[in-house]
Image (cartoon, rainbow, N blue to C red; front, side, top):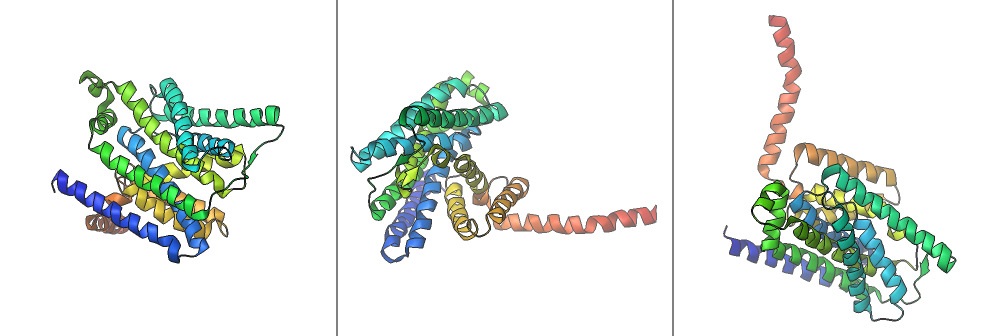
Length: 327
């Protein structure tokens, strides 16, 4: 299939999904809309995370930092500024943080990069907690001005659609080629003239912009926010798990996984929270072992390969017993 046809197919799929999501609040229950909000949040987070981390193979655990910065920006400014401007400033503050953080740690790879991004996230959370206690005399913020449900829903839908559309555009741009080149062989990309440091910071900042804007939009779902709520490491971990299980290097994998896991989360988290975490961990293990490309790489041939593997595993003891008997 030619690149033009692939582009048209991707845009058509995105348009159909957007139309379906737009129609949802008109006939769905409050519970369904609430679940859809969570789904859209993770679509935006996982798609933007995969845009940078899936291409470069850098494992960032800073999503909750960007999300929390955006949420606090919204809590501080929403009563004085228009809604969309608050969302934009939430994303902008996260970009500033990403540029500073990226300039400091993006020269590292692998475990070192993952641990440092997580450590810096925790540092930011504790710093804001200390600042709240010292200067405000409390920990947390009350959101007195909250927009209507449909406003929040349309904002998150716009962010999710924009995240997927940005991923489509970046994959077909020189920036996308540079990010993919860094993921394949960073030293070779440097020798070919790619300014890898700048490219990585730009990609990291794009991810942060969506995480910050999403945090700003989602903050109004709570009437009271505190650092532990909006800088919750679980937000970052689940974003990474969703992207990896769906296929971080693919376009539609994070979206598919976000929908699946949002439904599973709402069904299990309240009644059986431990079972949900066990299911999430089990699916990650199975995905790494048997579906390294994620759910997006699932094909009929995958089932054939799994069947042959299971048959071979079942026949192995018989083959060993026969060999021992013959020997």
